[in-house]
Every structure is written in C-alpha cells, then in structure tokens.
Length: 407
Image (cartoon, rainbow, N blue to C red; front, side, top):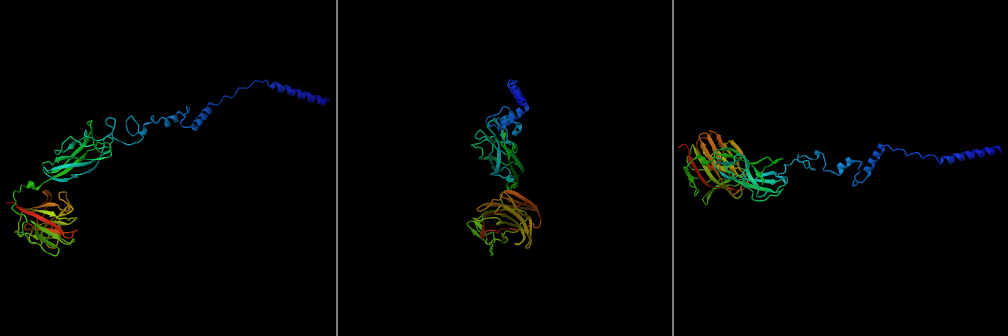
C-alpha cells in the first residue's frame, strides 16, 4: 500500500511541473553577427547571375558593368576619351580623323642621283595613307626646309587617296646652279592648313637629295677639233680576230664580241698620237646587253698594245685601267653610276679628258670621276669591246670626236 501511494504522489508532482512549463515566457531569437551577414551577402553576390548586379558589392559593378569609368592605365594617349588599344597615334586633327604618311619609295631620282647644273627633273615619291582621313584636292604638297629647287609649293593633290592606299606625288624641279649635294624636305598639308608627314607622330618629312656635278657643257669646249660620223671606215682599223669583228653598217662602226668570257679587244684609229685632248664617243647597245658585257675607249696608246682603257657595262658600271701589254693595273675597278643607261638598245656618250696627269671621266655629259696618273702622256685612241655573258654581243659606234686642249 505504502509504495503504491508514493508512486501516485510522484506522478502527480511531475504532471504539475509539466503543466506549469507550458506557461513559461518565450525567449527572444539571438541577434545575428553583422560580420557574418556581410560575408554571407558577399558570397550570395558572387553566386548571382552577372546581369543582376548586387548592391552589396559595388567594386564588382565598377569593373564589369561600367567600363567607361576606368583608370588612366587603360589608354596610352593624353586625350580625355579612353581607348582599349595602348598605341601611340597622332592627335586627331579637328577631332574626327588623323593624317599620317608611310614613305614607300622614291619612284624617280633616288638619293644622291647625279644631275648637271641647272638640269630640270621630275621628283616622284610613293606615299601610303596610314591615317584615318581621306586625302583629296583640299590637300597639298608643301616645301618645308632645305633647298626648294624651284619646286612649286603648295601644290594641290589632284586625286583622292583613302586610308590604306598609296599615292604617287610628283613635282617639277631644277638642279641648283653650282656643284654640290642638295636636299629639300617636303610634307603634305590638309584642308585645315596643318602639315603632316611620316613617323609615329607624323612629323618627319620625306625628301629629295641630289648631287649636282660638273658637266661637259661647263668645259666650254666649242666646236670639236675633229669628228667622225662613221659614214665609212677611212679613219679606222677594222679589227678581225677569232673573237672580235669590226665592220661598217648603215653609217655606224659595228663592234661584235663573238664568245663570252674572254678579255676585251680593241681597234685603233689611224689618227697620229696626241697628248692633251678630250675624247668623246657615242655608243648604241644592241638587242641583248647584260651584266658585265662591256664597251669603251682606248686612249693615249703609245702602241696598239698599251694605254688607258675606259669602259661601260650593260648593268651601269664603269672602270678605268692601264695596260702595258702584259699587266692589268686598275685606277678604278667596276663601280656603279646612275648616269650610265643600262640594258639593250640604249645610247651612252662616253667622255675622256686627258690633260697632263689629270684624267677625268664623263658619262652622258656628267663628270663621274677624276684621277691623277702620268704613266702614258701621249698616244693614239681606239674602240674596245668585250663580252661576259652574251654570244655575239654587239655595240654600234655612231660618232667619235675630240677637242685638243691647251691650244
């Protein structure tokens, strides 16, 4: 009995406590850590699609959504409008496009071309438009510095050249009145009156550079002492060897070198020996003329197997040597010169000045070299030919004349 009563009382006590607990006050929810909230928001932002910009991560918005608000390291120019390409370009003229030139080539009159005093010529440059403006008739060629050489400036362009195209621009010029080296700098000018040229900043000129040399006309020779128009062979020994033939044909003396690879041979005029004179001959190359195929003059020859030999080649070289019958001694080895016309069917005038020990060489009226040598001071003259490449290499002589000096 006693144990049953105690068990009942204990059960009643536990029931009372449970009922009282149902009426206890509810505790408040814990306040979250702000740091944890920010971290969670940032992590959420990273997981959001890029087209829904989160407000909790403004640094992401600056980089990905507003590229125009960028730091200056995104552009290599000093202009206010940023670009995506860090290149150095000329400042736009008028705010719309740029003017810039790429020099391509000298179409005519390469640098250091030799011209005579007062000689007229046409200079042509090939230029590429590498800017973004189209060149039109509002643009002009303008002289900048140096020697203008009578070139018109400004000279308006006559056609349009879009970016990426090339333009050949030409100007008539005249060589100065004294010998020397001359250079003239030129640029283009746009319709706004701004000059521009080549280089990264479009401020470098393109130019013409020539050498004005002494010409035969400056010698004031007057009428020749003697001339032969080659109507007949009266004044010449017509050479006839295994490899070289001279003949007369249609008012010319025709020289032919039969086999290539040998030395030159020459035929002598029957004129008596002379001491100081200027000798000049007009040569015409035939249908084939290449490389070191050559022709020229023998002068001051004390006998037919000695003297000075002056020659041109078909590729525009000249040389001067002396021959004593067995030994070749060069005063000038082969050297290129622009005043010799190259190739087949060309006419070249060769001049040889001999006065005392002074030897001067001329090509088409241009003085090309001067030497001092007194090995031979008197002798006859002749005509020479030799082939390096061409079988039956042929050159015609149309005129030979000389002026005695010191009279």
